[in-house]
Length: 105
Length: 283
Image (cartoon, rainbow over all chains, first blue to last red):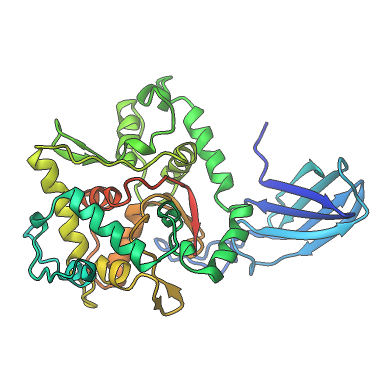
């Protein structure tokens, strides 16, 4: 099984779920140059991060090359409870994608 | 390398009430140095328990500690520990694994650095890792960053809680010379800015340098490899030595070369008794 680029920690307290995620991704802005060749390193960054809880979209983030390597996100939402499943997915500008699921604690 | 006068140690030892002008490295034993060093920092930062110095600047500054605690809640180095574990478990081309070189497991931090009497040199953990690789027909990894930091992060993580215990073997003149070499390096001024390690981390520990606060030297070796926000990735202790030397516009030395290994030997000894807590996150 290929290792996921997404780590999720989701906790519910008083009806509010706080979800924290650490995503492994180079997030190349496209403006950096290769020090040896002098050529621009092609842009490679996540464009959209989506989170679904119980099949319903609860969070969408649109990102650009301005976000640093290995983005960390933390957000809150209501409407889900302990034991429910959350699914986090991302799509990047080179057509890459990944998703992961976790249970709310 | 000539013995340097340790002028900075002079300034820092006002608690002893004695002027130690023109103090030479050989004028005090490692055990005496350790006591002086600890006493100096415990007095400079009252109320900070000895072991807490493992957290560097976050042991002495509340504001940056709050940010650091938030980062540690879901640390950026977590995926790298897992990468390191995968490296540890993946066999070399010849079928052997790191466990064959380290039969008692990845929790090796307490064993390094140490004086190898037979080879007449200080041996560090990254050295041992690469020697294991080469012994088994693999290419050695680069010293400062990249894949070596992954396996070091895993080994450091497994070693958390082990106490630093660097020994300078009694009666071994060559070991003592290496320790004193590291000590001289630490207190020697260098570079266009003419600072020694001690200028910042002993004399000025806790003070601001532009937007940063200088961490105390006590406990500085426990948390490696470190995920530095500035680097956006993990780096090794010798990478930081290089950076510090470059910052004062001094010529940096080679990672895992004699100078930095002896420096690590001295510096780690000065944190004896403090628990290892790598990998760690820093600004």
